Image (cartoon, rainbow, N blue to C red; front, side):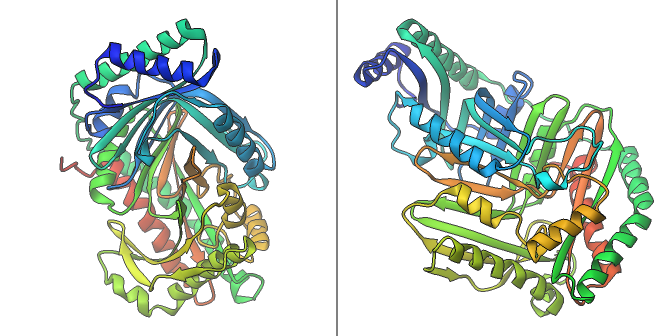
Length: 465
């Protein structure tokens, strides 16, 4: 429906579609087109109005703000991909769409955040995350290039209930149109930066032992590759200026997906991930290998001549292709190996393409996650060693985050290059892939580079817009 409709015309159109469905109650979805807005401005306007929110933003691609929960499920335990599939099938089958959208981006969406693994939780860990969070948002603001839409999902009982929902979406539309741009202030907190580096320094001895043990495992042939992570935690009692951080990430870390999962005002995960697990936009399936790291301040093309980085990268490519073969997808092509910059960090990147009419995203997740880019090879043995060597639970670090729409299109990213604000603390995690030929000092430098890349966006870097 066009954004120049008046309320009575919009009301009449939704009621007419409701009558055509021949139902009196149920889970309904209503969508209306909006004038084009900046998602950062809208998120700043709405973020404190709702306890739960999620943010997903990619340059020149489908992006969204999700607010409040219509239907949701959290899971503690195994079979998280199976449970996510069942939830999605049930709710998409029951959802009654009362507006017609010609643009695929405007379709109803369910959003997901998984844990890294239910097997890697540490006993006694405070603030543990669920193995699965799956949400049909009540409110979804969607943007793709110059087009914007507002969608609302809710259960209605009869036309009186439906009219109340129509009035609610129209009210939110008015709030969006009349919202004033709020200018986030730049933050310069050198004290917090010092606090982070002090914590990083204190963790170095443990990190050295961790990396040396990982290298020993690959040198002795026990593993082909293992990715080991470090965690730095600092006290943070200030208000988190999330919008300002997101803007910095957008400006300073191009080619990434900026993401937020705000469980409530005291538990927020955010970051800018360079790593796509897969995307499926019928009929195009794209998988991505990101592995091999160097500072963009050095010579990024040196990665193409680094046998260690190419070896690390090849494990990921081999894993992707093996996963496609497991799913009986044999018609695929690979892009040429290249170096891609994500701001001050560059990686080796290879894309794997296939054309397919239908694929279950949860089957893809089941075989793809965790890839050698965040776990190791062989996968089962690497997971076991991560559980033994790492003293903390990864939680959502390096886990799948993404969305699925009502026609089966989907995209999932790997939740890295981020932080968690929890109980007046900030937790950062970063890892490095270890293969034969790894040098522990360089691996530690890589982990520190990844930490610093994010930390300076929070405490130091200016926005340019």
